[in-house]
Length: 173
Image 1 (cartoon, rainbow, N blue to C red):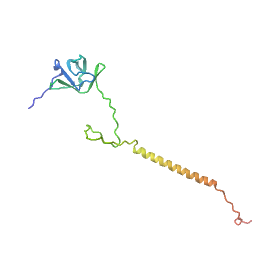
Image 2 (cartoon, rainbow, N blue to C red; image 1 turned 90 degrees about the horizontal axis):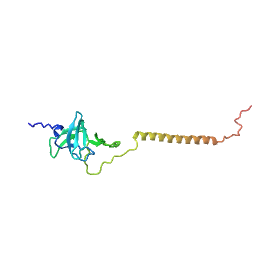
Image 3 (cartoon, rainbow, N blue to C red; image 1 turned 60 degrees about the vertical axis):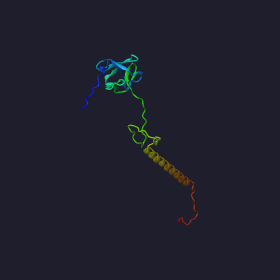
């Protein structure tokens, strides 16, 4: 039966250096010592620079039970140091929209040998294309109809009435 190993509380690291994983961004050296704590925050001091910062307990994770080469204290979120405090780091990534008809993106991209697949990009949807075809067809039919009507009316106006000189059709009085 294996024994359950419970990691030590952060206060037990009072005289021992430790490192955060992931390291806090914008701080060059990742070697820390525990200074003090209150109910919501823990104060740590950078062993090389002497920088003191408060880290909210909600961001602290487990302490590694292996101490080789140094004790690791896990962080639940990636943190960055700015304006004299630590803040959750937010990556500024703009997601590209998924192309129409493209397969759903995979959670973990796989390494492939060879070029990436080419995804066709359609500039307009099928419904818009269909609508433009209907409007275009109606426009062509309207122009042809107008042309025919104008020619018939024009030809009717250019016709001269013909007169007959035959008197046999006139009734006698």
